[in-house]
Length: 298
Image 1 (cartoon, rainbow, N blue to C red):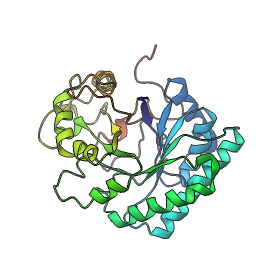
Image 2 (image 1 turned 60 degrees about the horizontal axis):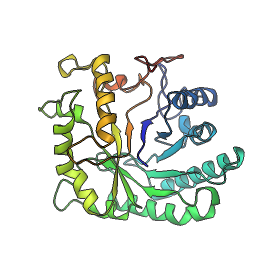
Image 3 (image 1 turned 120 degrees about the vertical axis):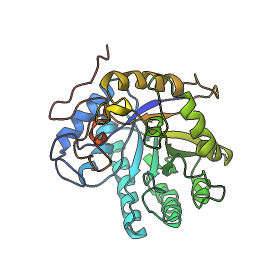
Image 4 (image 1 turned 30 degrees about the vertical axis):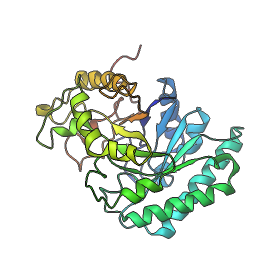
């Protein structure tokens, strides 16, 4: 069954930032409640420690299925990666017991855009192998899909070092795909028609993953609402692109194929300034103590 979920980071107030400044159990509870209230059934997260430590519990509380991210960076050792994977599995087992779920349906996503962040492919393969073995110790999450997240062009080179990583993923691979970033590459994008950009993305990475026998999950796709006026960053354009993207992912596209996908993201996060002025403006909802949807959902 095809789903259109939403990405979630808990750092939605000014001054909140990773790894653990700001979010509380109560704020994450309110966030997951809001995600479910907008009709989402799937949420993608990015960590299990620091401000992300309550994600599994609160997503389970509100019946949200998880693309559960394990935070892996350039300096992460295999020892640390294994500890985080174990923590994720324990959180899943505890949430299932607390909310009386016989099992949790989730993807265990080892790392985010690992090809872009200087992570070694061997580390990801070793971490995924550990997760595949370790999950058997936790009955409620033993059926978790073990995968990782790469950029949409990770397999663009014909002899990509990431091909073995995609091959090692369990059934699905998460790929981030952003039509909007065509602007930054010197091309163009239209909020109401992403098909030309997605044709390029298919030919330059997505298709290669599919040819390895993996189902492509679009791990992130979105359109910022501010920060680059020359690149059409307005709330009306974000709204238009959100509707367009949902329609495209449901199969109204050049492939006549539906894709599972996660919109990036649920809330504006003020701390995300390093990527550019548009960084804090990807959310469906505003930032702050009482975030509001940017447009009417009625």
